[in-house]
Length: 94
Image (cartoon, rainbow, N blue to C red; front, side, top):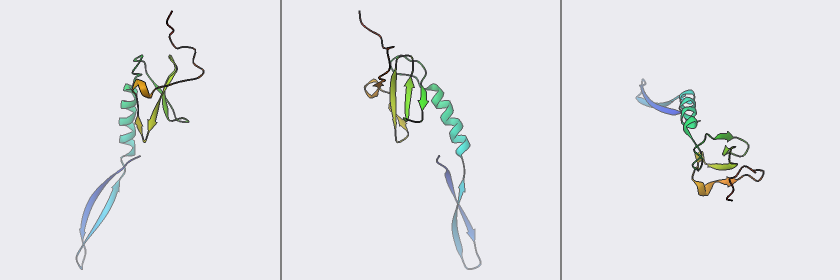
């Protein structure tokens, strides 16, 4: 998780010295990401997605489509979707 760095300046006896103090914001980032993640929906069916950490994909179980996450960015456009091989839930044209 990313964290913020703040610059603090302290004066020493000989002169000035600069030091960086790390401020951990992991919990606030995690909470914000959970809220954003709850809003993600499948671009095809508009149904909620679940994240599969083993494949780094967001999956729509109802229609059997998986969307990749690359460098932390979900690719949720239909042309990035991958049809799951075990899916028999795809709509058919009759």
